[in-house]
Structures are given as structure tokens and as C-alpha cells.
Length: 161
Image 1 (cartoon, rainbow, N blue to C red):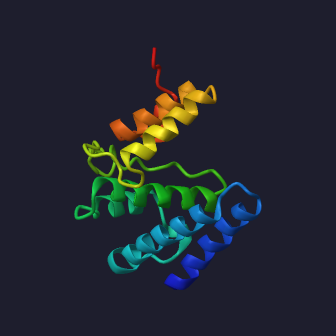
Image 2 (cartoon, rainbow, N blue to C red):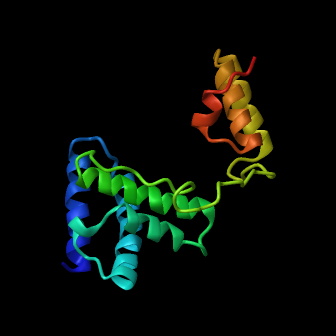
């Protein structure tokens, strides 16, 4: 099977998920881009180009080969392969842990400088607007995300008492 065929199989399956509205177009594109990296690895390193020959060991080998990538990117690549394989196996795929099985380090980047998309004055005005509309918890979540470098999901589940 060619690389193109292996990519096409993943595209078809992920596109079905987009049509079912269980996957966004953005996620589809990201997953395909990362799947292509994996397919290239298979072609260059393993000679495996059949979907039936892709097993957990192939994914673990792929993860272990990502020594030059940042931990976040390496974890994203392994996660994308897990997502594609899960979709190809209709949920029957046993996911590979990027950190435990591939030896990819945990992410450790902590923001020390707030993002530059909105200056401090604009951010303060937005926080005042949240407060004045009775959204104090939203303000706390936004501030924690901005100043601690947390994701919105992480900040929204924290106990701020």
C-alpha cells in the first residue's frame, strides 16, 4: 500500500466523523497533518505501509523517535496517531501513552509573560465588563488563564475558594 493510500484511508474515516459532527474541520486538518508525519516515519523506518500492520509497537517506536521535537509537539503527534487509529478501528484501539510508553517528557512550560494579543488595559476593561454582567467566575477563570498560563479547561475546573 502506498503512503498516499494510507493517508487516504485516514482522510476517509476522519471525514466520516466530520460529517457525523463528532470531529471539527480544524481537528480533521490537524490530525491529517500529524498522521502524514507518522506515515512518513513508517515508510522511512519500518517499511510498513499496510493499515493492518500498524500496531502499538509501531506507534511506540514512532514516539521514541521524536527526540528532537518539543515535548508538547511529540505528545501531540502520538495523540493524533492514537486518535486516527481509534477511528480506523472504530474505538477498538488501545492508545499508546506518549509519556509512559514512548518516554516523551512531560510538558513543563509555564508562562512567565502574559500573551500579547490584548494589552493590559484592554484586558482590565474586559474583566470589568465581565464583573458588571454578573460573570465574576468568568473573570477569575480568564485571569487565571492569562496570568498562570493555564488552558481555559484547566482554569474552569479549579476551586477558587
